[in-house]
Image 1 (cartoon, rainbow over the protein chains, first blue to last red):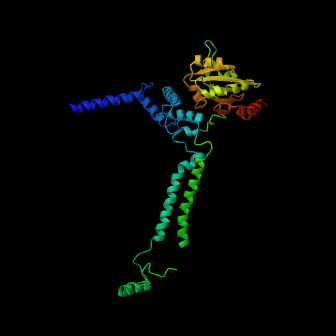
Image 2 (cartoon, chains in turn green, orange):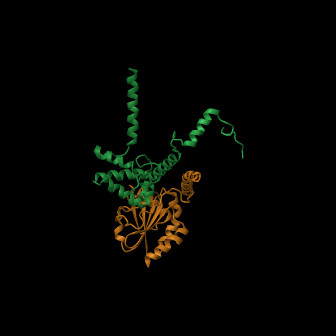
Image 3 (cartoon, rainbow over the protein chains, first blue to last red):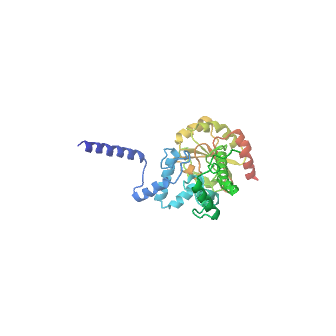
Length: 163
Length: 181
């Protein structure tokens, strides 16, 4: 009984929150509305910068949301809508900037950094990779000597005379 | 060998230092990471058709002004900087050969008209952009913003923020003079 009451409370609360988030006219076709919502996540709010227009309460973000819905209803493709907004506000308005000369470093930079890091690791490992157990004649003699007499003062690390 | 190892460590350090310098300069830039509202410069102005502010006034059709140098000012009665720039706007309206058009951004026509009655109406024509769509067409982020259009309707200049005497004399006047030539 109690669990049921709590559940009802949660559902009511969730409903209230959801209704406050969609206080504006949505598209009647759920598929189109889904497309509009997805597009809203792709566009930066031009006065708040780190929010998408889907998240922002700014006046201009609401205007852009309305514009997107109108354009979708009029049959524009997602690409056309994004291109239109980018032509007015620049590529900055897109959270996923297009791939072109100016954005080359942006798109390829991380991969270049990864490749560079891989090179570094590879070179380092190669310089460290000494084949173990492959001793030449003099080394083998030295090992035998050490096993026989133990480590002398000249061999102990850190015991040598400091220069 | 030791030298090579040394270089191997130096390389990433140097790269990291370069990247840090680039970021540091980016952070210290005067204009900050803000918008460069210049995407519309050099593009054709949107085809505007807006209801006039006055009841019974003919709608504002931007295309009708083709062949003239047009300055479009987005303003609102609720916008304090618009009030501040208004004297400069009146001065701008005196420039020979310039048609100054005012668009009330997200403002009730009666409020916009009251604003103009109080401060003076420098515009040859006005339009009402209640839903802010014309503003998005010009890529504006707030009011006031001002655009200069050439005779061909192409957007030549954009001032985001209030006009000042300096902006009028140093930016707008030379551009208008260039368009008149």
